[in-house]
Image (tube, rainbow, N blue to C red; front, top):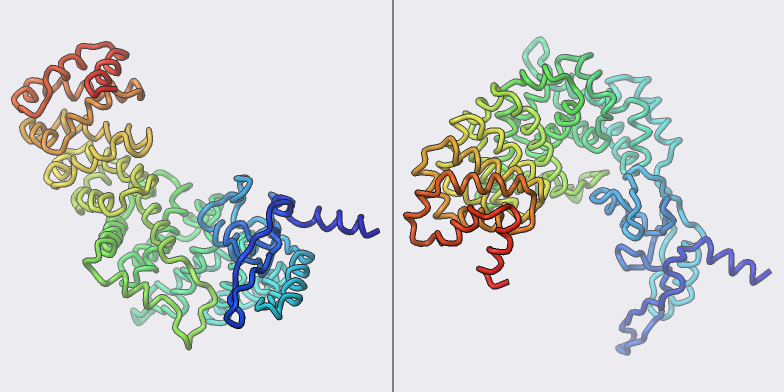
Length: 491
C-alpha cells in the first residue's frame, strides 16, 4: 500500500522535476549559515521559487499560479513544452503538491522556513455567472456602480473567466456603456463616471472577432465615441481605445475602413507621438499618467495591468490600423498631411529591436511612399533613409521586402540628386551590395540590383564607392555575386 501511494504521488506531481537534483539555498540563522535542501518539484520552473499556489496546465506542467498567469499574458505557450497555451486555458489547482509544500515548510519552521498559507480560491464559474446575471438584471445602471466594475475586474483576472464573460456578452454591455458615457446629454454634458474602469475591463476581456462586425452595424455611435476618446488627455484610456478600435475594425466592411474619420487618424498619430516623447524622455506627460494610474495606498485597485505591455499592445494595434487603412489613396494622403511619415520614423528609432513593430512600421511607410508627398517626407527627415537602410537584412524576411520596396520606390520616383547623395551618406549603397552578396531571396536581389543600376553613373562620382566591385556585382549572374562579394571581404 505504501509503494502504491508513493507511486501515485509521483504521477500526480510534475514528473519533469521530481527526478532532478534538489534545489538548495542558504539562510542565515543565529549568525550561522545552514544549508536547507528544497525538493526540486517544489520549485516553480518560471520564478525558481517555492510555489505558493501550484496549478497544473493542460500541457501537464505545474507552475505557481501567479507566475504562469503573468507568463501567458506575454507568451501564449507553455514555457517547458512550448505547447500553445491560451491565456484562458484551465489552470487546475494541484492540492496534493500544495499540502506537501506546506507540510515541508512546517517541518523546517525551526530552521527559518516560513510557512506558506493556503491561497484564497480564485473566483470561479459560479461567481462569473452570478455577476453576469446581476449585470443583465440591472442593465446599464449596474455598470455605473463602482463595485460592479471592481467585481468584474477581479473575475477577469482569471483567464478562463474572460472567455465566460465574452460568451455571455459582457463586452457588448461594456461597449454600450462606453457609448452612453461619451454621448452628450440634453445639456451637452458627458457622464464619465466608470469610464476608466470600463475601458480597462474591455481591454482585458477583448472583443471576439465574430462579434466585431455586428457590433458596429447595430450601433453607429460607437465610432463617434471612440473618436472622442482618442482626443482625451488620459494616455492609457487612449491606449485601450486604440486596441478596441483595432479589434472592431479587423473584421468589419472595407467601406468603413476606407472612409474612416480623419480625426481617428489624428488621434492615433498623436498617441504615437506621445509614446515617442515618453521613450525619449523629453516629455513627462506619459510618465505622469503611468504614475497616476498606479494604485495609491488608500485606494482599491483590483487589477494591476502591466503598463509597458499595454503600451506595446496599443502601438502594435495603431500600426495595424494604419497598415490596413493606408491601402486607399484617400487615407494615404490624410496620413501624410498629418505628419505620419515623420512620426513612424521617430517611433522606429525609439522602438529599435521590436521585430513586429519594425515590420508594421515598414509596411505602413512603404504604402505612404506611393504618393509623392510621402516620398518627399522620407527624404526630408534626416533619419528616413538611414533607418530603413539599417533595418535591411537585420530583422526578418518580411522587413527586408518592405525596406527594399521603400528604397526602390524612393530612388525611382524622387529627385535623383537628393536620393543619390542621401544613399551614399547613410551607407545604403554598401547595404545593397551586401544584399547581392548574401544568400537571400531572388526578388530582393533583383530589386537591389535595379536600384544600383539606375544610379550607377552617379555612384561613380563618389570616391568612397568601390566601383570595381559594384561593376562586377551588377554584371554577374544571380549566383555569381555571392562568390565575388565573399572574395572581396575575405570570406
